[in-house]
Length: 131
Image: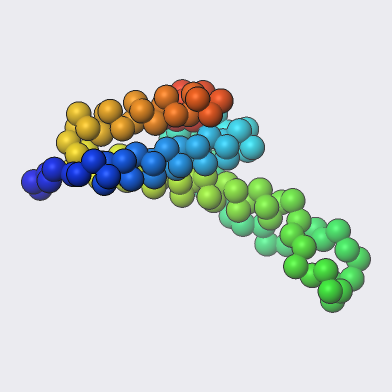
């Protein structure tokens, strides 16, 4: 596949999207205490994060027919967060592949390195977020 030259605004948009994705991954990894420091950690996380959603949630209200029925239990919330983190890790890998196709390997490496700097400026350790 032939790569095309991207304009500066397009590259800036790709950079911003990649930064946002990595910040969300870092936040979820911290919230779920999921280590992502190495490739093995990421592979392990992808396998471990496939737990099925909680079938029966424990409600905080006694009456299931109450008006407060939309309340979610903590197990269900954690399950959704694990599913989101797994999906975002997969999305990041796909985005890295597409970046290299769109801006070339050097451009993709620059975007990834810049994203690592952005994570550092936001207070996250890029190595612990799997970047």
